[in-house]
Amino acid sequence: MSIVFQTCDLCDAHKHDDSGAFRVLPPLFGHFGGLPQFAGSVVTVKCFEDNSLVKQLLDTPGQGRVLVVDGGGSVRRALVGGNLAAAAERNGWAGIVVHGCVRDAAELREAKVGIAALGLMPMPTEKRGQGQQNVVLDIAGARVAPGDWLYADEDGIVLSSTAIHQA
Image 1: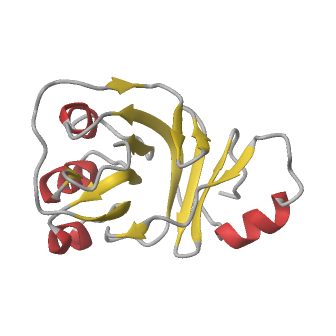
Image 2: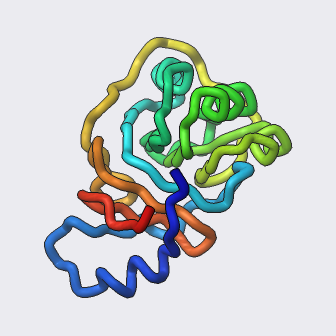
């Protein structure tokens, strides 16, 4: 399924929505994956400098969904690298948004998956098996819930409680 959208158009259409159903992530994220535009239903993970749950989820069928990882904004460890990006592509994930860092820039660019993160950090995580999945996140003041729809392109990242695109 090809999803057609532009985040600017979505914002124009929903600029007066004060219900909380339409949200925009702050402009903190850079694009690192091979797809500059991606969208899908949200799956969430909350973890801090431990990507055990991220790996576990990306090794399962993505079915066109987007994994949103709240890494607490840490810039000390990378939560996604080339191996996980390849797993995301292989398993059909549309994208990954990391409120934290990623690594293996060249490998991320080769993966046919959208990847947005705060920045690059070559240091890997520790594997402690800690974290939570399918929880409501607060990403820099914006609520992200499992089942939300996320739309990302070069202009930004927006969220909606329901699908708002044209297929």
